[in-house]
Structures are given as C-alpha cells and as structure tokens.
Length: 312
Picture 1: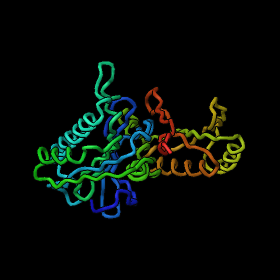
Picture 2 (picture 1 turned 45 degrees about the vertical axis):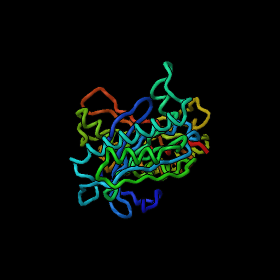
Picture 3 (picture 1 turned 120 degrees about the horizontal axis):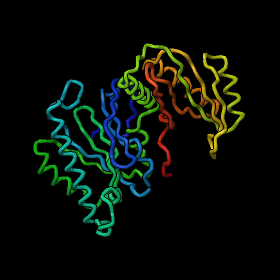
C-alpha cells in the first residue's frame, strides 16, 4: 500500500461521533485525528476484544483510492454511498470465499448467521486517510481471498485503484496499536458522548453541580495513599467501599463542585486517570445529576480502559 500499517499517529482530536451499534456486544465508534501526513478518520468496533482472537491470525487490509476528495483527503459526500456499497460487497465475498474453502463452517439450521460469520472473518474497522478508504478484516484463513477480491473490484469497483494486503497479526497489533484510540482519544470520546447525552436530555450545562468520580484499587494500602494525596486537591472524599471482586476491590468516590463542559471534564478525567494509575488504581468514569430533572446521568464501566482479554 506504500505505507506502514502501524505508523504511529500524533493524535489530535478534531471530531467525535457515535457511528452506531452492531449485533450482540458490538459497539461502533468513530473519531478523526491528525496523523503525520494529515487528517484521518477511523471507524471501529470497540468491543471485539471479547472474541477469541487466536482463531483469526491473519489481517486483510483492503480498499480503494477515492475518486473525489476534499482538501483534507476525505471522500466527497456523494462518493460515500458508492464506497459503503463496495465495502459491503468485499466483506460478503470474503465470507463467501472462506465458506467455500471451509465447508464444515457452512450454515446449518441451528447455527446463527452471526456465529457462522464470526467463525470465518471479523471486520474490525476502517481507516480513511489521504484519499484512501481501507477495511481491516481479521481472517481465520486467506485461501482464495486475493483472487476473489480481484473479481469483486473488477465488477463492483470499476475505475477505482484497489489495494489488497495480507499479513500475519496473531496478536492483533493493528487493532490494538493503530485503530484503537489512545488514552487521550478515549477520554475525549467518553466525555463527548456523556455531555452530548446530557445536552440532549435538556440539561443546562452552565449550571454548577457536584460531579462524582469512581476509582478502584487492588489494595487498601494503595487506596489510602491515593486518598492522602488527593485530599490536598479540590476533591471531597464521598465514600470508600470494599467491593466483592477478585481485583480492583477497593473503591473510592470523589466529588467536585463546578460546571460541566467538555474542556473541564477532559481536564479532570485526564488528571484523575493519570493519578489513579500512579497509585496502581483504575479510573472508572464519572456521574452527576441532571439539572432540572430527577434523572441521574451515569457513565461507568471503565470506558477509557485499554482493550481487554487480549490473546497472547
């Protein structure tokens, strides 16, 4: 493709949007960031870490050079529909080819489509950059894929220069270290999603209120050291609780009074997640009451954590 799949990006968040939700536990998100050579957008499934990655050791990166682009290297709006249609054909033919190569995985009356598809290939995301739009697909096998894709592009992608690249990636390095957003991006995504939900619920964000943060620790000693440190800052200790967990058992709930804005929450969550890590803790999100309603907004479950359950 003329560039490294894993070239490290200097990520500067410019725009975040929730792309949509797939089947089961899939959660598709999108972000735009600045890379070494210009802007790029990523759409990815944030929850594929629950799959058995060892069953998909091959990475297929495939896509086309866009015909009509903006000055930032993104396709024009009118071209996106053609690109999505082409991507659907590519993924359909990849699954079809693998089915022919592995007849034991063909559909049965009892098997669900989702289970059958995931036994063959997983589309984890796509990357748009410098007038290229590329799908990232993990495969159980590569047999027949290249020739099948050449036929697809010849039939459905006429006029497009296409790219087909395979590599062994049993550790899913491309997903974890290239597509998956770094911590600063995840913090922005978490807070942008939260504040958008609050605004959509009619909250007046300029009204000050208490915002509470949850942090967990492996040991009570780490928690006490953290509390001693954070007590010198502008946070009140609201609660300490011992949870019924094998790890991250010791919880502390902090509170701070102020307004809720994207800039303010980015500053606070970045600071608290960094300090929690300094004391062997894990930051687990924040919650607050909506102004003017009886509802309480809540965003927990360690939304800025790294991908988990990684096959080694």
